[in-house]
Length: 130
Image 1 (spheres, rainbow, N blue to C red):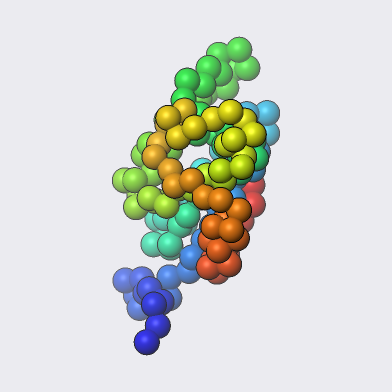
Image 2: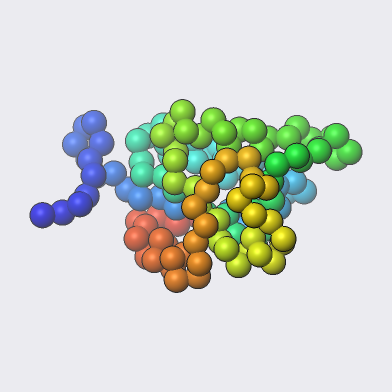
C-alpha cells in the first residue's frame, strides 16, 4: 500500500518544498517564492516551506519597510493557511545564529534540527530554492 496522495482528477499529488534562504528585501527572491507557493497550493500540490539562513527574516514580526520604499509583505504569510499551506518549517541553527525564537515570527512554525531538515528534504518530490 502506498501513502501517495491524489488530486481531484486522480493524478498524483507532488510534494513541493520551497526553500527560502534570502532576506526578505533587497532581491525579488522572497516575494517570488511566496507567489510560487500560492500557485502550487492552488493546483492542490502538497506544499511545504522551509526557512533557513537569512530567509528566516521573512517571517520576523515588526518589519518596517518605509525606509526602503517597499511594501511589507510578511503579513501575507498569515494568509497561507487559507490556501491549505500549513507546513512551515524553520532551521533551528539559522534561528539560533540570528538570535530569534518562535515568538519573534508572524506565524507558527515547526523548528527542525539538521537531521530533521535532511529528512524533510529527502521526503520531497521537488525542491525549489529561493
